Length: 457
Image (cartoon, rainbow, N blue to C red; front, top):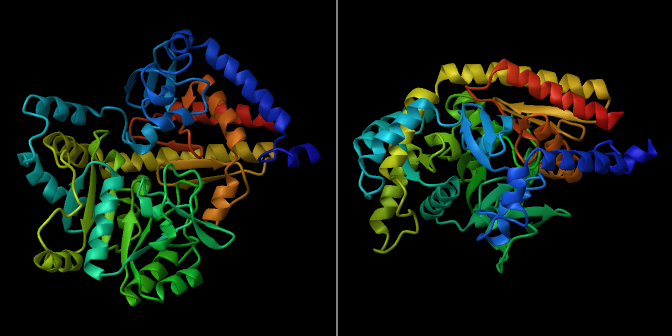
């Protein structure tokens, strides 16, 4: 017992290090081409990777992808992988869905960007309210941009300076949301590069599921907008307690505060996201990542009341740059891919398949955990499943952050890759796509069970 308590997640440091070393060597042996190409990093890129967080993958070197199709990836050494990462939700509906690929090819011959709408925009303008519920929309390129623009609207119409976030939240790279709690006080998140400002001057932060703290924070009526995920997804999954979302909506309305629901991860819940599945009523709605089938695009919508308030504000705003919009936003390639995704990929039938297979995955992983006696648990929101190397369920962001076990999770990740399974490099997240087969689910459950048994032995 003492050895386990001195490790992570009920596993001794020695056993974690042993698994990590064994699996790292097996990974290298299986990828001689990748090793030769990436030894010392990929030439020409800062830190040896095209985007700095690619170095956060736990594998000894980057996996160089030859091709991805459906729910599978093949690397340049010919190693096949059942993909449960899907670009961290960017390809949640599978790699290159045929209808999206056809739309991209069609649009490629018609021009890629010209800062004017295409006929596909007419269709997407009808589809967005139909799928997500809110009536009025704008297009951006990333969910980070969409959140930034939506928060500008919130501040503009309310005249209030502050926003409120929940500790452990994820809203892309929006500066104002890079705030957390330390010893009960709001602080800048550690590790922010080049951040000279005290972000807490414009942002309040409370724990998810803590309604008394939320009520106190909103009482001053200086918060323009609460921005939240329906389920915390970037600090080990934290589900809302019963009644939390109803109370959140009631408190924001009572204090004149707008509510922004960011569905960029929880779009896994079902058609229309967590918002439509559970009947939430946000003033603002943001979705990025998979909305265009993997083509960079995002959408942000608003209620009829808010749209009218912003239109009135626009009449009083002095001429000048609004701070909302980028040149490549709402380009015709985005619209072509988005139309195909909304019409043919993001369907009730596909979500039903994803739900069935994700439930099967959740049950299998939970059974494997139970068989080992390890103090872990499994969480799920629709097609998104996580195994968490700590007891659960988790109640707030602080518990979610504390549940993260980096060394243990890194060793498990590489061990899964060596058994032909790829999961997300962050928080043990696994997605089930319309292309995911029962056989792939069973392979993941078996691989995970084998690794967990080794760690618990």
